[in-house]
Length: 477
Image 1 (cartoon, helix red, strand yellow):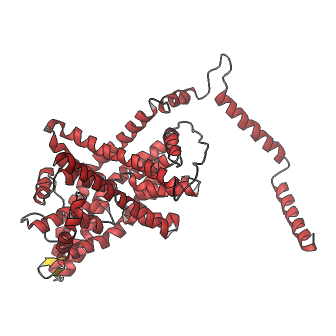
Image 2 (cartoon, rainbow, N blue to C red; image 1 turned 90 degrees about the vertical axis):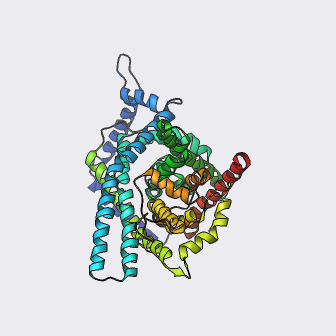
């Protein structure tokens, strides 16, 4: 050992000795005491003395129910269904208020202001009918559900129930070659896929974290729930008597959500056996005691850290999408707009998958936000059918309050039950929104895995729609 190494060793020992005295002379006793305290705490939880009431008896009794083989999954699905129901139902009124203010009230005011200063029609269209309306739709549709879902989800987390969800789902995900905590990221994805991708940080294994990120898009985020509910109400609910329509429609939407969980498991298994080959890692999951939720911390975490940040990213991407929507509907080559050219060109391809050119174009130009898919579909359908008196003008996205009026527009555009069914499947299995794509890149720092995460769902979506269409023509036509 040379002099340099000796000097370095002496310096390290000197610093360690200095730190040792700074910690106090009773460090050894403190460490031993803490070990015995931890052992005693564990023993109190696990050992019951004769004639003594078991510690945490209530927690243990609850866990025997919520993590049992027969009741664990039904309780889990009922609680998650309750959260989704509260989110969808509770968001209807505030979403209506926001839409009324931002679209019905502010949009005419902005149009009037533009006219008063003689703004060129094309600039008026790009800025107000395009950029502003897209931003307004995203805020109105996205903000209320997230402001309800994320606090409810965080309350379940703070209460101590979410670790039980991971415990229940662990065996399924391990069989799929994934991590048990993927159940938590999948559940978070039902609120927002971008938030679900961020939540994958709780998974320590890089391989399993990547699987969770790639498959999170199969969780039906809040931006896709309105599309699912509307299409199910028109095409599925319309098959049964009116008194059963709402129940059947709700069942169809829940079925699509469960199908997303199935695809998440299947794709996780496929990835773990191929490009992300490896054994599922073991992890110790300590079930924390149930505790009263911290309301103010929950509200801050869910509203500021999750809702506002995710919404801001969505708005940033929605503005250019609105501009593109207006341009493709209003820029003409000859007698047809760019949108009409694309729809006519893509219809033969889309029909093979039981879709149409309107749906393809809507999903291409609405990549920034799933919330504007239905308004874009309605605008494009009115454009190609030449319907009069519907909407606010060419290239202006809109939505109708009446399900019946919406159904009339879609039927006029040639939609059938097969189109509605395939749209529900394609809404589940298509590329992530641009906010999620950006978040995936930030989390993985990999162009390769961002591309895989983007195109894997859409390839699967086309495959599922193709086989659904072929089965439909085989048995029903």
